[in-house]
Image (cartoon, rainbow, N blue to C red; front, side, top):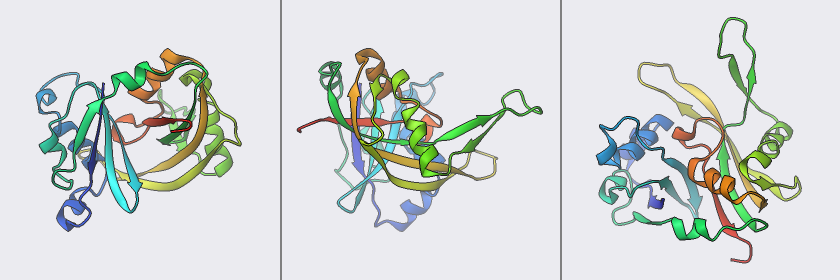
Length: 212
């Protein structure tokens, strides 16, 4: 597994116009792996946009290395980097307390008599958005105390697939401290993500061991 990062070029207005919706970011990520463009199925890539010291970064978790020049397509020149994620993942132990950050699309599934798939509605209150993460902790290999994490960002992002109308997706970013309870499941969470819309910037969790 690999963890990659590139600073987004926010000074280029044309590039920012191109990145007007989540589908554009998805395409950017996919095109950074040219060997997979004609492959079916493609491997899953997790990605997220983070803001740090006034700069915006695209983070990507992937099974193979991206082409760094292609990863810089909308980025600052020479800012892209990638490193192996494996040693970090192998050092994970049950009982470890870590600081985490994750961006999710908190929704609830509602039965719909007119559809076999039902429909989803976003959680809109802080209480329900907090509970959304709490309810998913155990099955993703960790425990979480409601007093040890918070929501640091809430917004809506434009999402559009080809030939479909644009919709707004609820985006919620959580930060805090968790305890790892199931090493194998937690590694799966870090490498495969969890929740809805994982291909579109949601579900990627990153961690830093406590004290570092």
